[in-house]
Every structure is written in C-alpha cells, then in structure tokens.
Length: 305
Image (tube, rainbow, N blue to C red):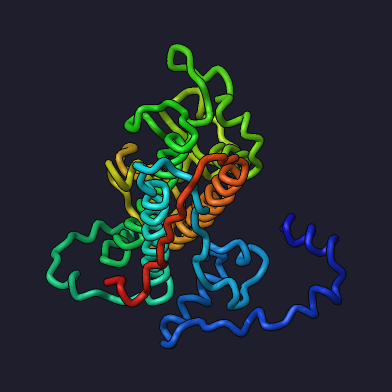
C-alpha cells in the first residue's frame, strides 16, 4: 500500500494510465499453467518486485537473483547455489499450495488407508499433507536466509547455531546485548528490512525473542512445531485451539490454508530483501586488482525434470 501511494505521489494519474503492454506477456502454453500464474499474480506470490504493484502478466515470473560477485580465484559461487536452492523450494511449495487450494480432489494413494472417524470433523488426506509440506518448506527458508547472511557478512555464528531471528545480535553469556555492528555498519536499507521482518517471527525457547510485532507470529511458530514434532489436526469446522489436554494443535482447513499463504508472502518479502541487500553490498566493493569475468548461463526450463 505504501509503495502504491508513493508511486501515486511521484506520477500523476495520466502517466500511470499511459503505461501500456504490461499485460502482453506470455502466461504459458497450457490452460493449467495460465490459471496457476494468474493465481500467483493475484496473491502476489511471484518472486518479482513488480508483483507488489501490479498483477499484470509482466510480473508473472520469478526473476530475482543474486548479483554478480567478485570472488577469490579458488572460491565457488556458493551464495548463488544456496539462493538457487531457496528459490526452488519456494516455487515448489507455492505450487503444492496452489494445487490443493484450487483443485480439491481425492487422490488414489488414500484408497485403502483405513482410519478411524473420531467424530470431530478431522480431515486426513494426501491434499492436507501437501499443505503441510508447503508450510514446512516455506518456513525453513527463513533459517537458510540466515545461514547465507551469516557467512556472507561474516557474522561469526557456527552453522548449526544459525537462526534467522538470532543473527542480527551480539551476545554475552548467551544473551543479546545489542545489534551486531557488522550488520548495522552496512547502512543497508534492504538488510534493515530483513531485520524488521525477523521481528515478525517468534522463538519460544529464547526469552529475549518472545515478543513479536506480527500478531500471528506465535501461532505460525507453534504450527510449525506441532506439524514437525507433535500432533497437528485440521478440521472442516472449528476454531484454532489446543485440544486433547494440549497434545494437539487444532485448526480449520480454511484457516490453515490462509495462514500458509500469509507465510509465503512473508518469506517472499525476505527473499527480495536478501537479493536487494546483497546487490547493494556488492556495489560498494572497490576492486583494484585484475579480475576475470566468469559467465554463467541460465538453467533452461526444458532441462528441469
């Protein structure tokens, strides 16, 4: 909303209306792919900043990448490798979610799976498990962003101690005592965006992090924990609650799907901030030594099986 207001202040209505050709881009050959891309556009889930202000077909692609980087001769493009992985996990999870929400149908793998009706409108199916997979895949991307930044900014965490919520701080006796100067000294607006986005998360076991700006943050964290490790039940009718003496997290199917979409939007923003932030840092680097460019080609869509 703020971005749209800023554009309206900078450009008059005639200039905005005169933009042409934004909807002339290809949405795919098949009707199925076109429906999928329109759904992503309408839900603002493409990894493309244009999708923040437009749902025209110009935004119907996942175009963000990490920038060109100057590396030592024996370094590999590890950050691009991690970002490729993160993008693929996001895109795959996004399609799993779309497939369930828009094409509700039975799957033959559920045939013959004998289960007891517990008379509470609980739903157990291949489709529900796909939403859970999408939720887990998406949530895990946040810590991978922290993992990448920890190495890129040399923040000093051991790889097995990294979390997206923790990397911004320095610690004494296992308690945060202030922002890590390696982050604050960058004066990088995109990294600041990531920092404030991290405050939308909730970490139960860290007393310093129990407060969160995002009202639903605690529920998202609890959902992830119960999906991964405990009893998580979706029902056709019912309110979000703990049942079975606290052993089970209960949520309606519709609410679960809505919260998963919300999580995807949050992670999408984090990925865009990451790309923009590293781009800004690389643009600051002065290189007075001889360099040799190495060109990487795009992975072709028809090679992805």
